[in-house]
Length: 155
Image (cartoon, rainbow, N blue to C red):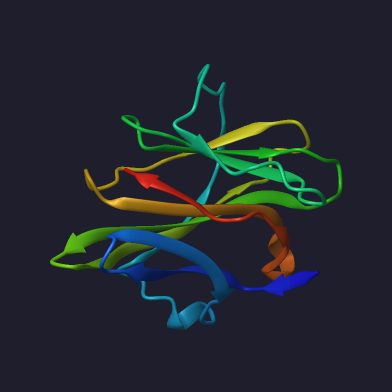
């Protein structure tokens, strides 16, 4: 299953205040609002002993992504030698009355190789809702191959 140019979108359940994140097609490059969209290349690092929340291990997906509250670090691990990068796409939304406004979203790509962790250091708004998924990503063609379910937490 190949998905082209995925991005995270927010669907809100205003009554419960629950934010649900799902994956869907993104706009092409120039249509990505440069004031909201961020592209980062992960740098090598040693991950912390524990994470706030991670994507679940998903059969066929050779990537995982984790968030560390307090440092606002997004960690991405490439879990297979398959020629693809591991990546996470994330979205940050903040409360606006009974809904959430998308303030930022972006991609963090780990091209360090199989078995390696990479980190993208962010600075998220406190109490924002952060959602993300992980997947294998082909940089030259800007194509996602197999993605995890989306997870979310407070930033």
